Image 1 (cartoon, helix red, strand yellow):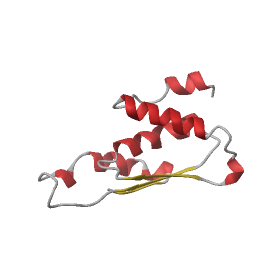
Image 2: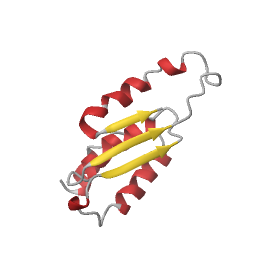
Image 3: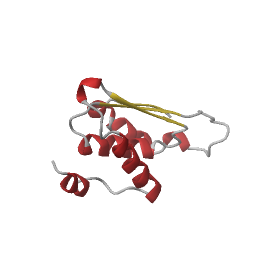
Image 4: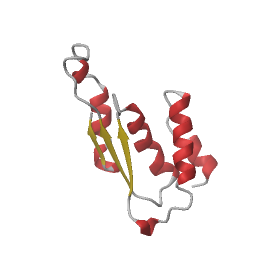
Length: 107
C-alpha cells in the first residue's frame, strides 16, 4: 500500500497533536526492519486512551510490515475523576483494539 493510499484510509485524528505525533512516530519507524521484532509503543499518562487507540488503528495501516504492541498506563485516581468516568465508552473502544493489535491498556 502506498503512503498516499494508506493515509487516505486512516481514521480522522481527534486533534492536530495526535496527527502530528503519528507522523513523527511513522517517520521514526522508516528504518525499522520487521526482523527487529515487535515495536512497543508505551503511553505513560494515557488518560482516556484515545491517542493510544488512534495509534493502534493507524500504525499497522501505515506499516503493515511491522508488528506492534501498544501499552497504556495512567493513575487510577477514582477519588479525582468525575462520577461515571470509569464507565466511559472509551473503555469499549480501547478494548476493541486488544485482539488485532496487541493493545493492552491499564488506564
